[in-house]
Image (cartoon, rainbow, N blue to C red; front, top):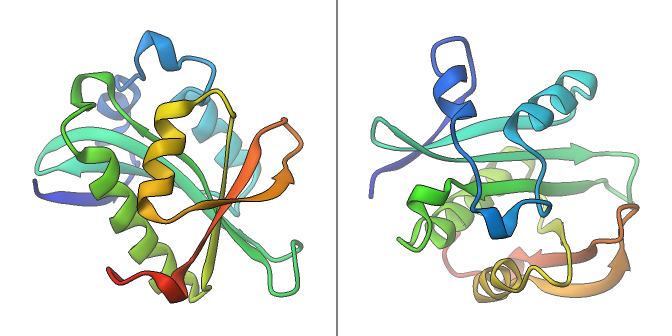
Length: 155
């Protein structure tokens, strides 16, 4: 596995849009096209594609919202691995790389994400990485999870 993150641009836009979640996961995450449109509307979002060498395997979107909390909150708002690449270890590896990236980019010791409580496989993955529910619920009814980077050895 040779993972790297790339900005989405005219050279890779079409191939990234071809990525989709499995049928069972539809409804847990917006389409990549919808995410990119949202990022156009809100410049705080950072959409990126996830590649294994030259092959696009996933998508993520994150951002720092300074109007939340005392020092702002870093949100890993979207992450998806394309259905053809699921079950091959990409999810865990991508999450760890994303957490490193977010820490380097924003220097915040806590990262947040939200998840529907019936998205069992995502919750299992997030917990393996170190995320825990914090008791909050976001505006879409998703439960908020956070990770304390002070306790993470892979940084």
